[in-house]
Length: 198
Image 1: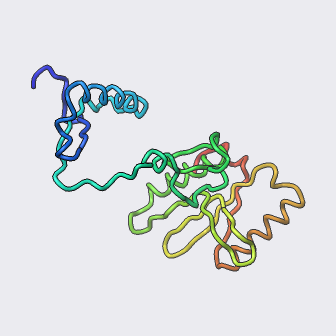
Image 2 (image 1 turned 30 degrees about the horizontal axis):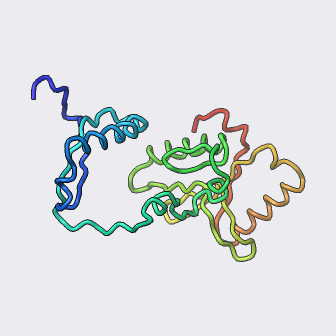
Image 3 (image 1 turned 90 degrees about the vertical axis):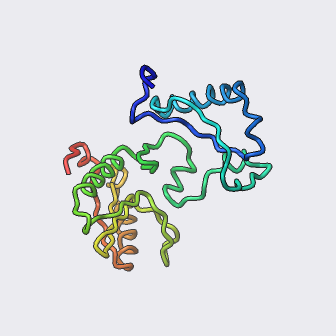
């Protein structure tokens, strides 16, 4: 309608409910839901969502357990950045993936640029901080595992703590375990991430 500020890029939120409950969603209830939803939409920077519509479900909805709040609050199991996620907030994230340092985030962004610029047939997959069970080394989480063209490579971003003699020997031992799997390790000094050009 003219003058309503709607465009082709404008959306409405749709709440699908059991047909038997549609009459429960009076204008007052719908307005209350819209007010709370507006707070979430603002946080997500979704100013393009302009209204809320309540519709009856065409198919039966799945049953909701009594403890649905607890289920929703429990994070899904993931091997990505298990140590960092267990440590809580404070780690840099992008695309819903966690990095353990600013230097790793820079490397991730550069890898994403390489991924975007690669031909579709020679694409790469980027796995930041995945966990892997190794034969004689327990569970390890390399900074990045890159997959592409039927191959894998490990990227490790070495911070200043990697330059001590003991840590250097530990890093060489780590690299040896990956080498036994036929996977090469490439180490990047953290100071090289200050220049973010690929």
